[in-house]
Image (cartoon, rainbow, N blue to C red; front, side, top):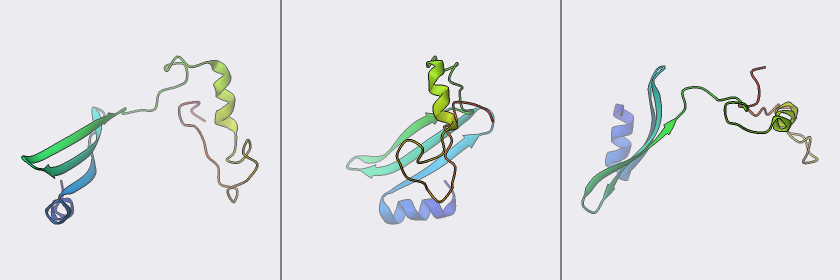
Length: 90
């Protein structure tokens, strides 16, 4: 934790932050106070986004990666594009 996160923990009793060892591991961390002391919860995140094939998902899901936000919901988001990252590398 950096100094600001330590201050937040001291003030609030909990803090959320990310931690990474580049190319090795990424973590989402939550450190908190409980009745008997300090505890933590850590969630491992992949170091890269897997493809549909690596996730063993059906090929027809690929088409969802090409939709712009709103294509299937009937509204647009000011032209901003939303991409499903695991689908393709383009």
